[in-house]
Length: 101
Image 1: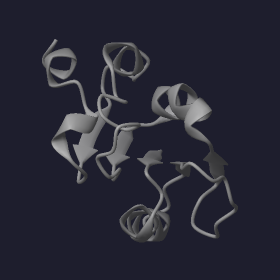
Image 2: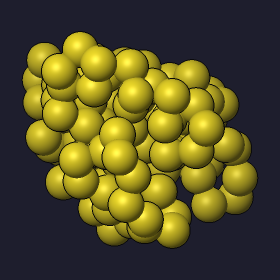
Image 3: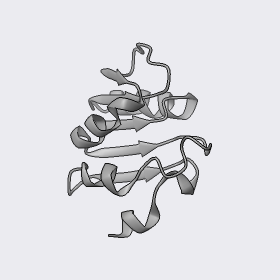
C-alpha cells in the first residue's frame, strides 16, 4: 500500500505508477476529491489512518505554515515499523529528530 500525502501533480503521478504495479493507493489532500488512481482519499484529518495502513509513505507536500512539521513524532508513531518514508517535498514537513528516533 502506498500512502500519498500531498495529492497534487507529483502525488497523482506517483499514484498512477503505483497502480500500474498493482498497489493499493491511499491519498491525503486538503480538498478531498475522488481520483481514478486513488483507492481511498482523505482530508488531513485522515493522515494517521493513512500512515498506519501504508507500507510506503510518499510525502509531496509544499512547505507552508500549515505543513511545517506535519509529520510529527505522533504521526511517525502510527506508522508500521517497516514503513518506508519517501519525501519528495520540502524537508521541514517532517520532524527530522522524531524520524531519527
